[in-house]
Image (cartoon, rainbow, N blue to C red; front, side, top):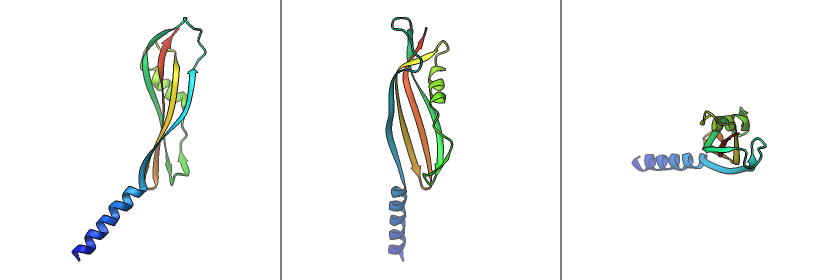
Length: 113
């Protein structure tokens, strides 16, 4: 009986680890979110912004990734910020049983002009 409980517990742990996971994927690279002339802007600092959504069974999305929301989230970290330059973005997904949490991250240098 004890052996059966231990084997069942071990199989449950293995099954749980197989159904959960994480994925990281690069989505893009851009010069700037708004065209800016060289030498006519001031870099305020580096910032990161995110946009999240969830999906069920990895095929039924309950939202969409929104680049504009992620960009606004990054720019608002500096009150005088107007745009991002040297932009990079990537997507991360966390899989938990039948639910997936997807995060779109945008990072870059916040500028004012």
